[in-house]
Each structure stands twice: as structure tokens, then as C-alpha cells.
Image (cartoon, rainbow, N blue to C red; front, side):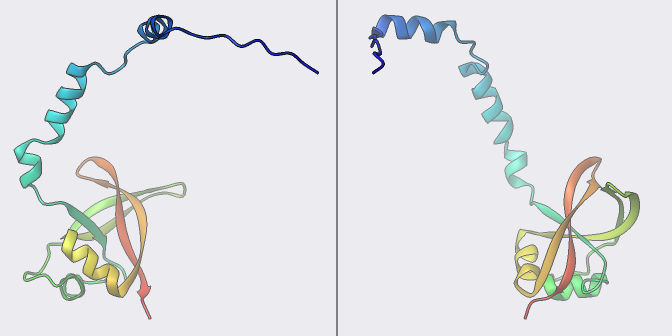
Length: 130
């Protein structure tokens, strides 16, 4: 039968070990990150979601109807990003409420696109929910 030695580490030794560990995020760094995340400008801006214009959401009128929008959304263009390459697509923007309404009636798939100069997911309608 194997014999194992047990050791006890004092509180002081534990503190010394913790002090040796690098602190990647100081309190100041956390405070700065929190402040940047919760700016009043960010909190005021509504989130938007790109909806790719393909059936069953092939027109701005259909997006307006499915999302319950009071206005006809504008058609914009962007580029898809995939292993097969890039391609130009048209899309409309909807807010959170519009996206949730579309999700209630339509199955959506996410695809990667360039959105306002950044890689981001857009939604493409697959078929109506039964």
C-alpha cells in the first residue's frame, strides 16, 4: 500500500503564491473596461440585426410584414464570408423586437458577413415554422 505525505500550507504561504501569480486585469483595467462597455451612447443605440433578402424573406415588404415594422426597411449590400469564398448579398436591418417576431414564424440560419466593417452574423430565412 502506497503512503502519501500530507502537507499543510499556511495562509501566509498561500498569499505569497497568489502574489507571484501575474495579475492580468488590475482593478483599474476592470474599471476602464466596465466604463467603456456602459457608455450612455452604447445604451442609447438600438441593436440591429441584418436579415439577408432571400425567400421566405426575399423583399423589404416581406421583412416589414414579418418583423411588424411601421416603415419599409432600406435595402443595403454586404459581403458573405465562408469557406467557399465571398459573395455579395442584400439585407435589411431589424431591431431586437423585429428579429423576435421573425423568429416566431420563420426558421433562421446564421451566416457570417461583413457588417459595418466587422465580421458579424446575419440571419437568413430557411422556411416558415409549422
